[in-house]
Length: 112
Image (cartoon, rainbow, N blue to C red):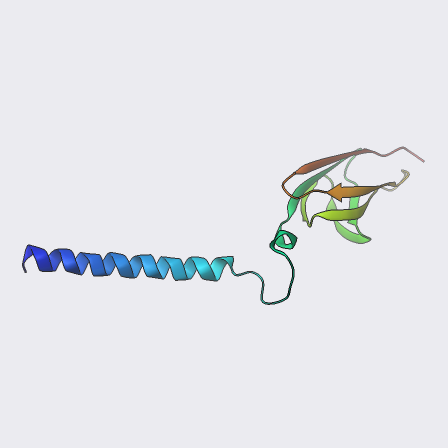
């Protein structure tokens, strides 16, 4: 096989690999099926919840989400958070989650 044909065959293989990779990448980043939501609505923020003492139950917007210490992914916006531990007063706050700002929440629960 001539050098020219060998180089042409390699170019075809490399081009096919690049196109296949681009198609795979497009499939991976297409997370939204439909709708008119802005792209920033798809962002999530890492929020680390810690409690003293632990392990306190973590509720976000009234839904149990895990036991502290725990890191959760939350959408930007305002969330009602509550930490509960038997024998202690619950701890609750309104948490404003800002896109691009990972957050740490540390709660000290007081004994009843």
